Length: 178
Length: 178
DNA sequence: ACCTGAACACCGTTCAAGT
DNA sequence: ACCTGAACACCGTTCAAGT
Picture (tube, each protein chain N blue to C red):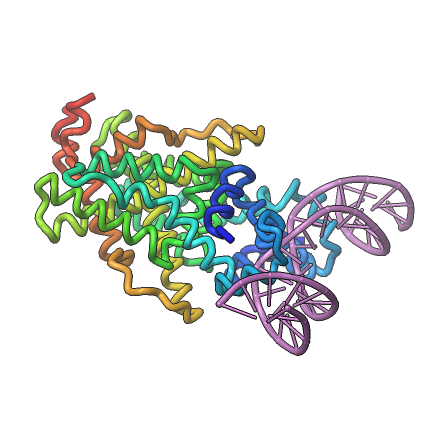
C-alpha cells in the first residue's frame, strides 16, 4: 500500500479539497479506518506529502546558489496542485520545510554568507518563498476554476518572485539591474 | 443578523476548523441555509472576515513608515485566532489583502521610495509578512494544543520578523533609486 | 426580502473484531 | 501486523416552500 505515493497523485489530479481520507482509501481499495494504522491522523499524512513535494529542493546539487535554490523551492511547490497550501499547512510540523530551510542556508553559505547571516537570510527567504508561491498558486487555480478574481494590484508570478528574491539577497542592487 | 461580526468572534473563540456554516448558523439562531442569502458561499464569507481582520492596517495614520506598517499587518493577523490562515486562504479574492497592499505601498512612498519601487517593495513585503506570520501563528497554536513540534531550526517570532523586514527595506535601495 | 425544512452527498476518527 | 465493519458526530450547499 503506497499511501504517500497515492496521496500525492490524488492531490495533483484532484486538488486538496478532494484529498479526503475516504477518497484516498477508495483509491487504495481499503476501508478508511485502515489508513489510521499507517498515519496517526490526516495532518501527519499531509506532512508526509509536503515532505515528498519538497524532496527535489533537498536534493539540489552541491554549490547551488541561493537564488537558484529559492527558484527550485518555488517550482517544487508549483509542480503539484495545491502544493504550496499543503506545505503551508504543515510547516509547523517540520519535515519538508526544515530540509528546505537547511538547503537555503547552505546555498547562502555557498554565496559567501557566513553562518549567522545565512541562518537569518534563509529564514526570511523561506517565509517569502512560501508567501509568494501560495498566493501565486491560489490565483492560478482560482482563474482555472473561473472564479471572478477582481483585478488585484498584487502581482505574483515568476518575475515578481525573482525580484523579491533579489531584494532579499542583495537589496540596493535590484533597481539598478532593471 | 451581524453575520461577519459573529463569524469573527466565533473564529477567535474556537479557531478556523470550528468555524463551520452550521456552527455559525447555530450561533445566530437561524438555519444554515439562511446564511446563503447573505453570502454566496463560505469562501465569500471568509473573505469578509479577512477584510475585517485587516481593517486596522488600512486605517493606519498618514505618514506611517513601512516598518511600522508591516508590524501592524503582522499584529492584525495575530490578533485573531487563525487570522493569518484566513488571510492566506482569501488573498486571491482581493478585499482585505488589496487594501493592506495599498497601505504598504503608501508607507514605502512615505519612506521616500518612488512609485515603481514602492509597488515592487510592497509586493515583496506583503508576501513576506504573510509567510512569516502564518508560520508564527501556526507554531504558537500547535504548541498551545500540545502538538509535538519537533525542534525546528526555523524561527518565526517578533524579532525574526523585524529582521526580515529590515532586510527587505534595506536603506541602500532608496539611494540607488535616484 | 429573508428565512425554514428537508434533503443530498459527503467528512475525520474511533474501536471492537477479524485474519 | 494489518485490515474490516459499524458507528459517532459532524460537514457545505441546494431548493422548494413559507412569511
